[in-house]
Length: 193
Image (cartoon, one colour):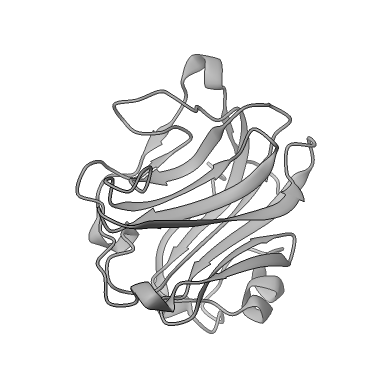
């Protein structure tokens, strides 16, 4: 990555991406991809769109205090989450992909290694976030808790479940119209400006 967006937790840096329907998990599949680089400790929110607790609908991706990436979601009553076993707080760049494949599984992938959890039991539920907006780098617009310290790049949100092969084939390059799922791309933050 040539340029990236830098966050300093102490400064409570974050990006509010709004509450567009395209950024929601809702009732469809979703894939979230990004590159991250951090050596900070503690719980850090990378992407937060609700999904913090059972009663907070939406989804969230964060780093646990053990340095591992975790993703979770909730419909306002029931929540599920899965973590990857790779330590991502080693100061190196890591490619992360979280795939919410509603009739199959939740996949949390770091550098191509995926941890999975069946989520087909929740395929009929709505996971729209009704409480907050989509933010990068903290818990919520109204909460600077769990602020992220590090860099993010190539953040991509898709309203489909990308397969691991497609993710691997495209993780090291910017997107073009030849991507097989380009029509499902909902948000793309390159941070080149």
